[in-house]
Amino acid sequence: MAYRPTARTRANAQQRRLSIESAARHVIARGGFAAASVAAVAREAECSTGLIYTYYANRDELLRAVFARASGHELAVIETAVAQASTAAAIAESVAEVFVRRAVTGRRLAHALLFEEVPDAVQLERLILRRGYVASVAAGLDRASGHSHPVRAGAESPSAAGGAARDVSTVPAEVAARFIVGGIAENLVDVLDPTTPPPRPDEIEALISALSAFTRSALGSDPLGEK
Amino acid sequence: MAYRPTARTRANAQQRRLSIESAARHVIARGGFAAASVAAVAREAECSTGLIYTYYANRDELLRAVFARASGHELAVIETAVAQASTAAAIAESVAEVFVRRAVTGRRLAHALLFEEVPDAVQLERLILRRGYVASVAAGLDRASGHSHPVRAGAESPSAAGGAARDVSTVPAEVAARFIVGGIAENLVDVLDPTTPPPRPDEIEALISALSAFTRSALGSDPLGEK
DNA sequence: TCAAGAAATGAATCATGATTCAATTGTACT
DNA sequence: AGTACAATTGAATCATGATTCATTTCTTGA
Image (cartoon, rainbow over all chains, first blue to last red; front, side):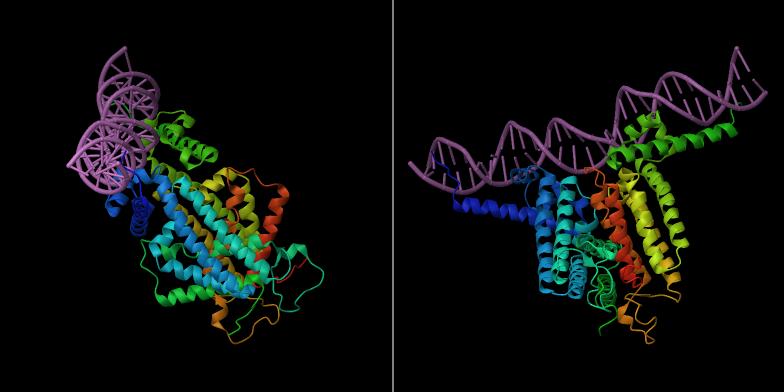
């Protein structure tokens, strides 16, 4: 008897795995998921196509892993931002800011993660990411609005609490959160379009403040500019 | 000399074209774009695969045509709805209502049109559709808010016009419109998910009124329920 | 230094579906 | 009742890329 996988061996394996995922991420960041053929990833990772199948059952599984890892990062960032904000207005600002800024740096990758055609396995992961965003924002809104569930959709400027709840005009936090996530994402479609020149810095600032303002307005806080 | 395409002949051709597109639409409405192979469409249209290439240069072109036709209808409906609404609040209500109701009838097709993976040529068409929605809503908002461009993002309840414009807190109509379209669409993702049972009628009503409320709130009209 | 496996290679397969095209059938006109 | 050309067929081809696997190249412990 003679060979036994040792610590170093297994570490190497882990590293290989990482290097493959990293290569895949680079390829995607350069040309999107469409460019991420197994051959292209292998080339970038400087290994054979066959080897990739030692580490992943198939292409979809590799892409899913890459997406999931990236998802994790992105979601964590948003969660942190939301956690630090205590008012609905602050959440609105943070989310718009963080979302847009992260997207425009790493433009191509953001476009791939958010909008590109992906295999089903990856799409599943994308839905999870979106749900994560929504859950995070919704939780933040719930927390910020103090009480239990629905978010007051309307200015609470005149009187803080009108007493009698009019259910008709309240919005479940989840719907609000979805709306915000979807609304911001939709506003990034053109901005991230790879066939288009990247936006100027001032355009980015303008977009962020517009999105922030709109969201704050929707949440009923900060009805007009607070300076 | 002997054969000459005649009126009837050309009418038939037109009919064939329609029947192929209609077949494709049916297939898509049943199983999404993924199910719309040339073979499947041919089967549904009761013709050979070859014939399809007499009428369309290739599969993408066929799907693009189908999508474009459907797009046209959908956009027209929204445009009509927006045109009839004169205030921002009315636009918010119309758009939410029409969008959601049309989507849940024709669930599968709506899902395909809005969310499914599509070939590039179709994706292009989808972007056009989205831009159409945005343009329509933006135009409506501009019209409703009387003056020229930016939409006041905030309650205009306290005082109608504060005099000095604070640009910081205004939102370009296009951003607002995009936000609304994206926000509503995002809220349909789960509702239209083909692997999920369709929503109950009361869920639909609840969603519509929540979306409408949130949108009205964002637009700064109707801060709290107007009964 | 060797034997036993593990890691890695990459050209040869496979799978899937779009696309072609030689052959057949239909239509309009004399 | 035939000719000229259009419409239609569908099996055979192609294109693209993922996936396999026989072979070669390391690693480890004795």
